[in-house]
Length: 151
Image 1: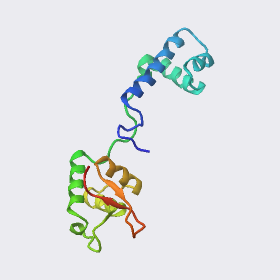
Image 2 (image 1 turned 135 degrees about the horizontal axis):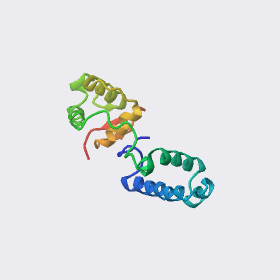
Image 3 (image 1 turned 120 degrees about the horizontal axis):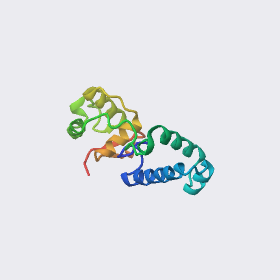
Image 4 (image 1 turned 135 degrees about the vertical axis):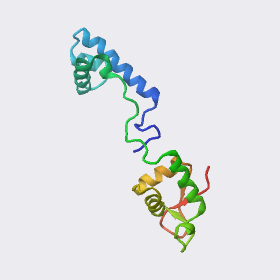
């Protein structure tokens, strides 16, 4: 699942986890056994073994937080603004004249046309939420439509 900051943890959450890893470094220096460290810090033995290898190789720096995980966003802020503007123009402007609904599959196709980036329908849904659009289920149709009012 994608999260706004990339890895599902806030900066505070990453800092808390880093603090736990740094507590482990003090215990490594005192030759505290791995099972005892794991018990004290309430983490898995495997995590402690990984941390110890990093600590031996790179010191405390090897246990520092590397920031949010994930690949980041594929579309820039300018591209997101352009996508929002295209959605506001309506489907007919972009070739869908049979009805005036944006569907996830249509938005995915629009993204390919505009930016040459492919997204799954779930990825399109997450992207639309990120830029302030919400999905709606039409009363007579089974496919999800996209509500194009920002908010």
